[in-house]
Image (cartoon, rainbow, N blue to C red):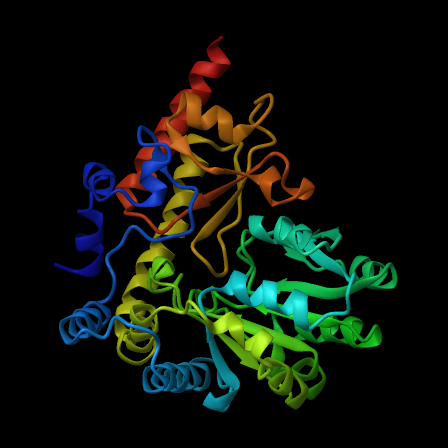
Length: 392
């Protein structure tokens, strides 16, 4: 069977039986609120993990295993994005959020505020407070239907004490893939204030043609000098529970800081099996990813067609990257939370946009990395709920 046929054949009953987080928190609903795939991992990843288990390679992370992953990450960055980074400047961490917390603690001035474009990935709104940092939300602007950075707003946020910009590219939840010129404009603002950037590029492998991912730190020496980059195979290859991500350090001062024991402790907890899986993903699963991207490309288009036919008042622009759809429910006539409405009345569990910041009020985050029949059923159930609501 083709990839599409294999993935289409994964039914809702089977997904509930597997019991991933997305399908177990609201077990009676269609799970569309957690950014994980409903697809099995690539065969090369499965084989690598089975081999490691058979060999008993399940202890603490050995240097040789770590090195193979950092070298695979470097090859991926060069082959996929043209970014030539020495493997020695790539460090393992359990996940991107660990990288963010380490960046806040050790790469910004005490008390520096966090500048956050919104709507944003939900933990970005909660983690800074855990480190006694204030967040300055800077809502994205919309130009010709596309979300763009509010450069003046970012400039004002830095002037108001901001010290670190969280840049997410490709952008969760908006699906934007930023062009080099847009990133250069951001870098100019950051450099003018002597600030830092945490660049979350976890969704970088998930970009649809004709768009192309540009690593932020690769655009100039200035950007490299003020950036901590975090990447991972977890989203594109469905590995988030295996706990392995990578920090890319792009200047000598940050390399020296990371070498301090209290900073390098961030690497602790990076899992052997996750590192082995990431290596197999970057080196041996590229063809699998290409096929999966084709399927996801179809999903984002089919969702648009289904919404246009069955819920035309729902705003939607197909994402340029990620497998996340950002839906505008403001014109549906729903009072209160649209996520609560659809979970209760349609049996579809999505993220309420307000969880992504005040700029997300009235919106929904819908995960597209699921079999197409599931998307079709979700839209049909949502449309039926709206019809019943309108008839009251």
